[in-house]
Image 1: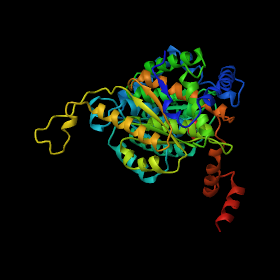
Image 2 (image 1 turned 90 degrees about the vertical axis):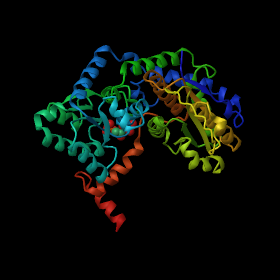
Image 3 (image 1 turned 90 degrees about the horizontal axis):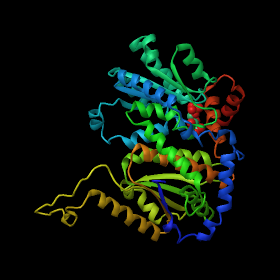
Image 4 (image 1 turned 180 degrees about the vertical axis):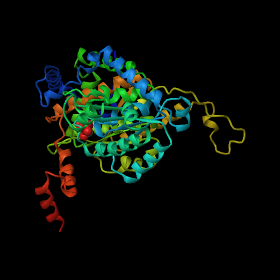
Length: 448
Ligand code: PA5
């Protein structure tokens, strides 16, 4: 059974459903290529059965390590970028209260993030915060050589060692990296840090259900067993029947492919719950890095409504008609809040008195969907009953599998990211990194 429902009825005014159903055979062979490991990038399919293969000893180990870090830390800094950062943040933010003051009341460490930018101001301010706090660090890099997290970690390690001394600092650092290779692995071994392994066959953006996501999520105080259990449920469900009528992964992959081939090159993920903002960021990275190559791919964008109805809403309603939307809709919020009656009714809101805020939100969602469809924007809807660990586990697996199936429909390798190297080469050349002498000469000539 799946708690994730997918509805594409509001895209059918734009595409022929026969084209969607006509993709069934391709979808079947894409699933087979994924399960049999015969498609492009087949050495990066470790995420496919990861939920069912995650064993008790790993979960226990992560929970014990998380408990040790929680005991020592008012703040835990997660250092990583891309797939080594966004999954953990997406889940933690989705499950956390919106306000720092409420977060504090729960007694969990405050989770802060570094290594996902190179901002001098951001890093300076982070160190200022850490001067005042008891803290620990989880540093995550599969390759162990990515510049942004390596640089942030160097600064943080220096700060931590000065604050606690090298011996205590080493007990406050956990490294998650390759089992044998990379500068981070070497550093961790030499300094004696606790380490977890990113499996060889799981790429960064598919790694949220490995220690990369699970350790920070556990430190933040959330139930990683329920998260993994939800993903297991979706893993089993998705395998049962590939048919587009029954399987939300097949339907989502097929519809977005038909929309793309009809000229809809931009997909906007829409949420109506602000705590899903980073889930959208995770999805953007997963789909953007997986599909955007060989001059192909849907451009993934995101909006948070109703906030963005007062900014991007204008463009979505009337701008270039190359868009479609996928609303991620939460049926039941955790809380109930009613609009109060007001005797004076000066704000003219008494017509809403007694209604739940969520009912107003849902009508905003429905009204927007209909308006955008009328304006030429096909609408897809992914709905879930609530935001909790188990449903998020299902949702994560749903999007991972749909991304792989979609990538194969586009005939690209959804598991590599060759394009990410271009900026790195230029940056290394500009900074004069040893080994890049020829590139440094060439780039300097371009700038003369
Ligand atoms: O999805 C990916 O593979 C990338 O986004 C990586 O996660 C990102 O580049 C960080 O790489 P690393 O974990 O090697 O530091």
